[in-house]
Length: 108
Image 1 (cartoon, rainbow, N blue to C red):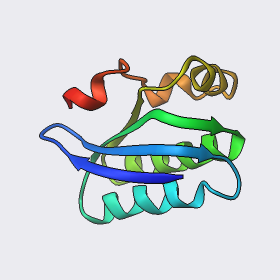
Image 2 (image 1 turned 120 degrees about the vertical axis):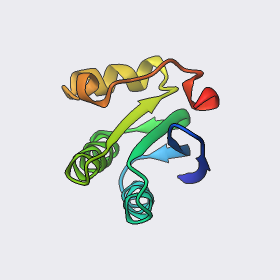
Image 3 (image 1 turned 90 degrees about the horizontal axis):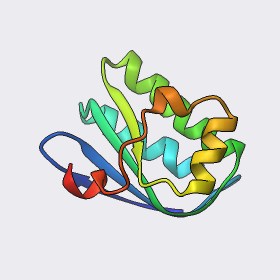
Image 4 (image 1 turned 135 degrees about the vertical axis):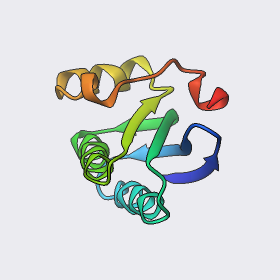
């Protein structure tokens, strides 16, 4: 898993790429925490290039969401494939992660 940060006017966009399964998802938690430590409060996680995700990857996103909320911010996802959207839905987190359209990461 790799991540790239793009700061835009409305969101700090975290571009994730690769495998978001155990044990590779620790980097997601660290990257979200780093954004929050820099006082970024509106985080958009682009999942367009995520090739695989499991419950641990979902957990990393949920933890990031909770941390963002506690800091007075928001974390949303965009670009998720149909497969990842289905996993988020099955996990019951799709509603509060507020998926944005697939191209929102580019327009943010």
